[in-house]
Image (cartoon, rainbow, N blue to C red; front, side, top):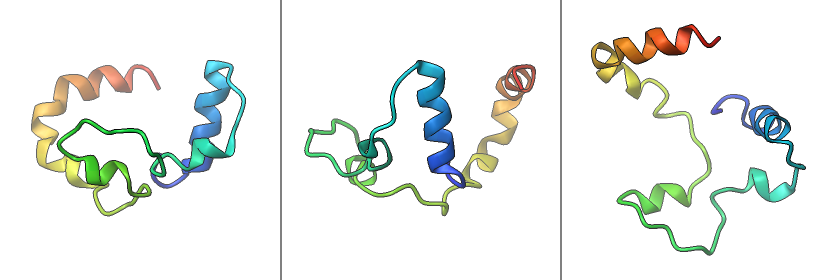
Length: 72
């Protein structure tokens, strides 16, 4: 999603049988209320700085990683 955002959004929409709208790429620009502890992040464009953060939890993700690898 982070490195090929537009392409991945289109794939998701195709899978769901939904039509593309420009607003699909502008997800952070909304006036709706956001109820999350990270509300300020929801209002920012997608960024790459956190892409490696999952590695801190790699040892805990073993079972999930094995399951996801069977879906590829």
